[in-house]
Image (cartoon, rainbow, N blue to C red; front, side, top):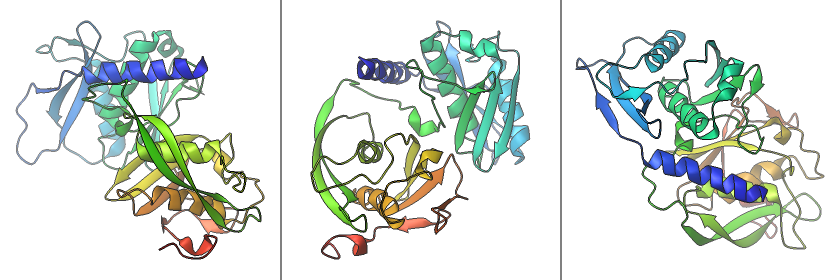
Length: 312
C-alpha cells in the first residue's frame, strides 16, 4: 500500500508537470543580459507557467531575493497566480556551497499535496537557475519538508521535475549490471538483475536504489546501508553526480573501504551515458569516507577489485 501511495504521488506530479504551459516573455530582454525563467501557477492552479525575464548581477543572495520577489508578484499581463501562497509570510534562506536552504513559516504546511508539489517545483526550477546553486532544500518551521508518505523530500534539483511526459504509467523490463561485495568483503561480484521500471525513472536513480536494496544472489553481500537515502542524481557530460545522506558515511558493513565506493561507481559506469561518478554527502564534497577516501574527486570505474581481475 505504501508503494502504491508513493507511485500515485510521483505519477500525479508527472501528470501535472506534463501540463506545464510553457514559457512566456512579458518584457524585452536586452542583448547580453542573463535570462531567467520565473515560474507561476496558471489561474486554476493546475499547471506551471514560466515567464522569462532579464536580470543582471552575479551576487547569489541578491539574485535569490530578486527571484523570490518576482515569484510573489505576478505581472499583470499574465493570467496567473503566485506559486507561493499569500499565507506564507516569512521566507529566509542561506547558501552553503551549491545548496540553497530555504526556510518558510508553518503556513507552508497548510497547502494541499498537489499545490505543495507544484510550489516545490516552481521554487526549485526558478532558484536553481542561479549559477552555483544546484540544489534546493526546503524547511518548514525549521523541519525538512516531507512528502505525502511522511518521508523527507531531501534536496531538490530542476531535473527532479520532468516535463513532456506522455505516459506516466508506462513500464519496461530493464536488465541492470550491479556490483556487490564478495564474502570476504575485499572484492566485487557481478549480479545481473531484471527489474520492471517506470520509464520516468532514470536508470542512474534506479541503479543506486537497487544497490541500497541489496543483493539477491546467495554469494553476494551488501555494500550500502539499507537505511541510506539517495537525495538526488543527475548526469552532465558523462559525469553522474549522486547526492547521498550521511548514512553513507556511517556504513558499518564489514567490507573494505573502497568496496562501497566502487560498488556504486562500477555499477553506474555500466551505463553508456556514464564514464565518471561524483559522490556528495548532503550536497557537500568535503567528506572523507572512513577517514581514508576523500570524496572531493571524480571516480572512474575500476575493475581491480573485481573477483577474477579486470573485466574485458
